[in-house]
Length: 379
Image (cartoon, rainbow, N blue to C red; front, side, top):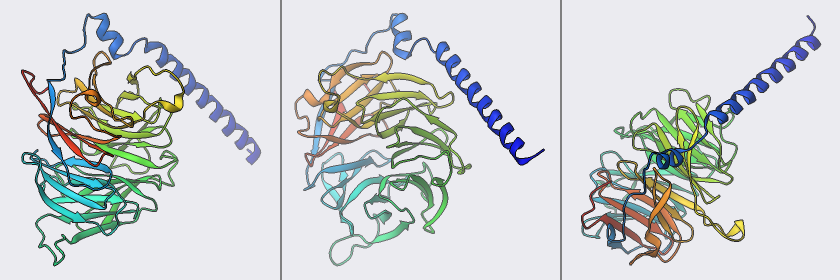
């Protein structure tokens, strides 16, 4: 058989495979005749009862002199670390609003921060294309600053997101503008695995966010400027397990659902979406109706789920923070309209480990802690 004949057969086989994939996709769409909200409402379910007194601002953390870009709760839920345009990391006592550490960074352009699983270290990354690790127990230097204990270098683009692998103080995952995610050994500073890059199933634009599955820490999901989210297995770095489509803009934020079987996304297209991790199906779209130009639609900057998954907290560039009922896809509260709301874009959101408090960070330079009040218990 000649080379030309082999090429013809290969082209024909590829066309057949693509045709079968398209038919399978169409068949799946026919079977998906409803979404979560449609089914829930058909069963007589209604939105959860929620009022402005059920989630109240109990603390305002003031101290940053620039826009707040990122925050993370410590595992023991009493501390928060925040990263700001002012080039500092601040560790706060969430109960007293006091600062316990203020770390001046060598590179002020920081985009992300994260607590280590034992709460004794923090990581941050930004426009220096590196991820810096600080041990909070380190001896303070003469200038009052905590020295860097490790710098993870290797990315060829900005570091947009970092997260420690749950229960593994020595492993951390970053995402970058070089279109890759990297699993690091924090002890040695070496890359363990690179996800994407030269591999065809990787992202084709900046990777803005990562979320590690707390039920199975070998799995994580990433969101990108290529409008997709992708699922990765740390044991198989050569290809993405699955790619999730649906968004019409950059995927700015991803977060696993509490059961580890689903995950949420937030995008420049103004929507949040819920996906089934295993099947790849889009289960629900969370979107408000907007009148006027599509360019005026507020973008979703950050999301978090309540501990049960019934509520989805979504921060927007408009300063709104919608509390969605995930079951019926209805907004039950907007923290942007209540007393003590933020005065600018909400850039980051985080829920304490026990689900009792929500923290929001904003371009107004402040962080705010919201606690369930009145008769409302943790949902």
